[in-house]
Each structure stands twice: as structure tokens, then as C-alpha cells.
Amino acid sequence: MLVVSEMCLSEICIPAFVTDIESRAVVDAAKSAGARQVYLIQEPVAAMIGAEVDIAKAKGHMIVDIGGGTTDIAIVSMNGVVTSHTIKIAGNAINRSIIKYMQNHYKLLIGEQTAEKVKIGLCNLYDPSDDITFIVKGRSLLKGLPSQVLLSETELFKAVEDDTFSIMEAIRKVLEDSPPELVGDIYDNGLLLTGGGALLGGLSHLISRTLDIKCRVAKDAINCVAKGTGLAFGKMSSLLDGFESAPVYKYR
Ligand SMILES: Nc1ncnc2c1ncn2[C@@H]1O[C@H](COP(=O)(O)OP(=O)(O)OP(=O)(O)O)[C@@H](O)[C@H]1O
Ligand SMILES: [Mg+2]
Image 1: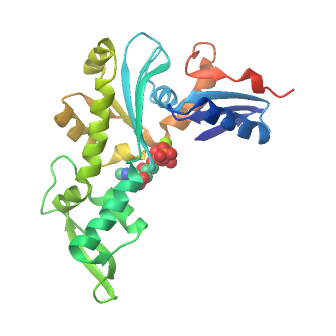
Image 2: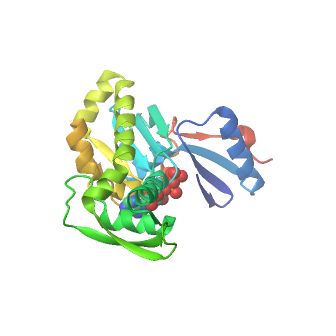
Image 3: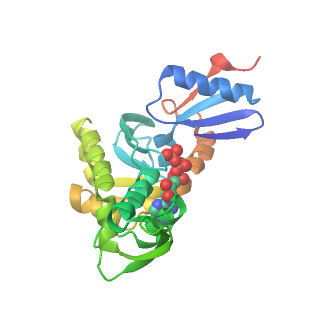
């Protein structure tokens, strides 16, 4: 969630799936933080705007935002979310899988930061090689002493394969649950990846190959939601669905 304050106007990004009660809690929190007027924008809408995609027309666009805690998948059209799905498999879960793999296969205990370094430095989900390797340092579970292992791209792929395929399965589910006209548009427009997890090596190519749809990583993928939330201030009159004012809560 992201809060932008500008002269006591607050713009807050909420996941596409939050309930009315949850939205209300967000508005109350912003109000307690001193906001005079509060607007809520759904994250997929903000991410699309941040990625400079024109979502105002009656055309379908698909976004997959892979963050730390969640992967949010949505089909957006006419400035609003049509279908969405969220799974709790994203960057943190992938790190946990790497930690587990190192424990199970090498009896090497590594921390979150090491897993993050391995993920960023070695991940190749498209054409992993046995020859490209990364030194992973940790503590041997057998000896209790410092130890290191040479991990290959192929092994890392095996470690994160299940998580990656869960994300692709969720994408497939959203496509299945969406109106066919919009799915047809996505065949033309492709799928946009945002969030830090979009930078996983080879992910966009793997998605294209597996699901047979075009897939691209947004420019400045990590900051799309924040950027789009800011840009939404300039589109307040047109973003009726995705940028609802909450006048009930206006400060009096
Ligand atoms: N180059 C990279 N390759 C792979 N993963 C990366 C890279 N850079 C960042 N990440 C991952 O992206 C995740 C953070 O992404 P992001 O900042 O979009 O998340 P968030 O918005 O804070 O989380 P959420 O949307 O779940 O609330 C972390 O899990 C991090 O490991
Ligand atoms: Mg996020």
C-alpha cells in the first residue's frame, strides 16, 4: 500500500481485491494521519498508468504485479479492474524456496539476504545453464561451520520452478475467468509485468513460451505503482472506476 500526500490530499493505493470494510479502514487511517481528502486507487490501475498504458478505452489489458508478499494479476479496461486474482507467492516465497533448496540438497543454512542475492544474481528461468554458477555462502548444517556451494542456474531453476509455475497457473485462471472479448485484446496487447519480481531473469520469456502470449517487463517496473498513483492526480476526472473519491470521509 502506498500513501501520497499533497497539501492534505491523500492518494492511497489498495489491492484490487480489498473489501469495503478494508477500504474504509484505509480511509480512516489516512484521515488519522492528517489527510483532508482521501482517494483510493486500485493498484493494477495505478501500475498501468505508471507504465504509461492507455487503459481508458474499452480494450482489455493484463497486468501481473509481482511484489514481495503477493502477486496481483488483473485485467483492466476502461480505467477499472474487470477480473483480478491474488496469490501469496511472490519474491519472499521465492527466497524461502531457495533457502529450503540449499538446506535439503546441500545441508547449507543461508539467510534471507543471501537468498535474495542468489535470486538476483543467478536467476535464469528461460534457458538455465549448468555452466553459469554462483558461490553461495552459509553455515553447514552438519558441521556447524562456515561453508560454500557452487550453485548453477539449472539448480536455481529447480528451486524456484514450483513458485514460478504457480504464478503462471494464476495468470491462466484470470484469463479463464475473463470475458472472451477482453482476452482477445490481451492476445494483441500482451501482458505487462511490474513489481520487483518482474525482474526475475527470463520470466517474461518463460511466460510467453508457456502461455503463448506476448509478455513485457514495464520500464522502471518496481516504481510503476508509485509513479501511476502520482500521475492519477492529473486524471481525476476520467478515472471514475479506479480512482474513487471518498467524500463521506472528508474532513470537516
Ligand atoms: N532484480 C530482481 N530480480 C528478482 N527479484 C527482484 C529484483 N529486484 C527486486 N526483486 C524482488 O522484488 C520484490 C519487491 O518488489 P516490490 O517492491 O514490487 O514489492 P512490494 O510492492 O513492496 O510488495 P507487495 O506488492 O507484495 O506489497 C522483493 O521480493 C525482491 O526480492
Ligand atoms: Mg507492490
